[in-house]
Length: 176
Image (tube, rainbow, N blue to C red; front, side):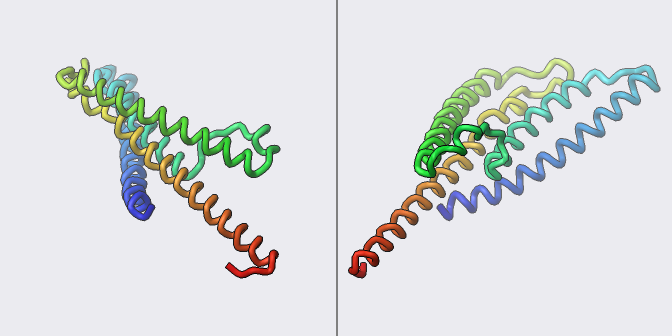
């Protein structure tokens, strides 16, 4: 668990840095593109393409960061009314499904990156492997956070079970 947490701490800092740099770059590119198009009447051919690739990276890095902070949208109308044990089972099941889906996306993302390794973008003549790498890297980041959440849930469940066993042992008059 400590290894996963230390890796995720580094990845979280890196993701925040990437998101800040790319969002600032997208803003500058958008402003520059508008200036060139409407003031100088000479539109930039590469600005929209660059912004699109940056947005893909921001999306995947942001999704991983949100997963780590438990900030993804969830519909809890029904789940919140269930018992704690059923809620725990449903949340664990949902996280397992997310983990499986991320593994599939990582695998398919790697295949996509491999298939596009020689392709270049039309406007910037940029290797397409770089924008498409956001899929396996971002999904791996989300998967690590999901694994951490599952491990925390498992360790919380085990420590709760230990506390209940200890409590029951004291109530019965015997010490553990």
